[in-house]
Length: 423
Image (cartoon, rainbow, N blue to C red; front, side, top):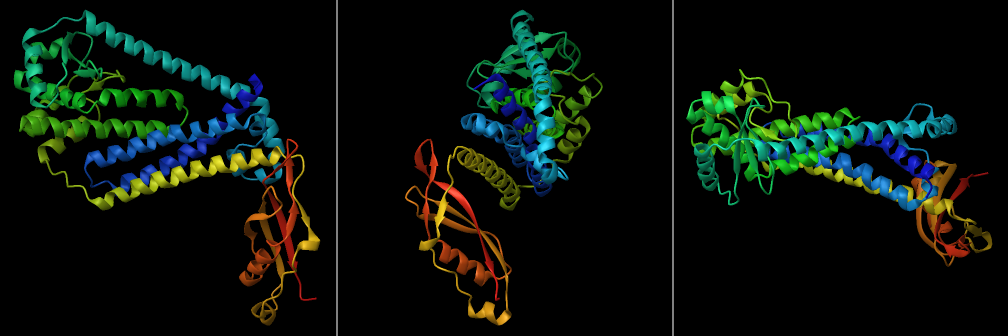
């Protein structure tokens, strides 16, 4: 595969991802409406599903294009077909896109690379802070005790730093909690303990690993507002879940609410590669903890989530199937040819004669390698279903000269039209 073909495949995938992510975003928004009174865990699951689908759908389509080789590069992206007037000007749109795909792909690569570099620098900063910042023996022992109380078996390290405004959690296999020196010195111990319980909730749920994958998807699909909206909502729901776990461990939701109110007066940390106690909307989190009136989840709330996953996976499967079929058709050196002497003439049904129905039935047949009809379908009705079925049954009995690909008989689809006329 040449470099130009690879650019064509990537560019077409980027263009199609615009409408694919938009569709996923619409269904995710519908799921959020259906789950608005559910527990944050249900909304979090729906949002994470939507985020993953935003990556997987274009990725699967790219793989299908690459497997199709150069033949896949000649197809117009679905986005172009969806544009007004694209049916009549498809060639001009395709020529325009082919001429500028290198710029599109190049711009995407530069921006994605810059965001990936930002991620790498953030990870390096976290690792350096873990090794260089000072250790507070008292709070390290207290954090270890709290971790055991929350069922966290692995060691959780604590480091005190002057470069943050809020506690943050990083790491998964060897997690570390970074605590601002100002909080250790100035915040009442019982409130700081509440914030540490929140951070341990992130450790217990392995949220840092999920957040890292989330940041990687943001870097790849940075150009799509749906991805940023879903990502923001994931972080909001994640903080609510951690609040619930911490409040349950402390047995005092109001203590955590009071600790969060202290953070409201502190500048927010902008570090996106770690879990911060001041993430999300602090005011709404404080009110929620004080009211403690989160309703129980209902099984019906999961229906929009399942519908979203099924619809998007079905669209993904349809994309693969249509591209695979297109590649197969372009590889043919000879298409199927009907042997009309073997065909039976479709007969008018009594109902159609009585209603004097006329029209054209358009069908498509999948011709097997032995010339027989493997599948038959009506693609456009004549206006009378009985005539459509009569045409499908009769023409399906025809024999065909099979298609040829690479010098061998091949399965292929062939369109057929039958005109109904009473004379």
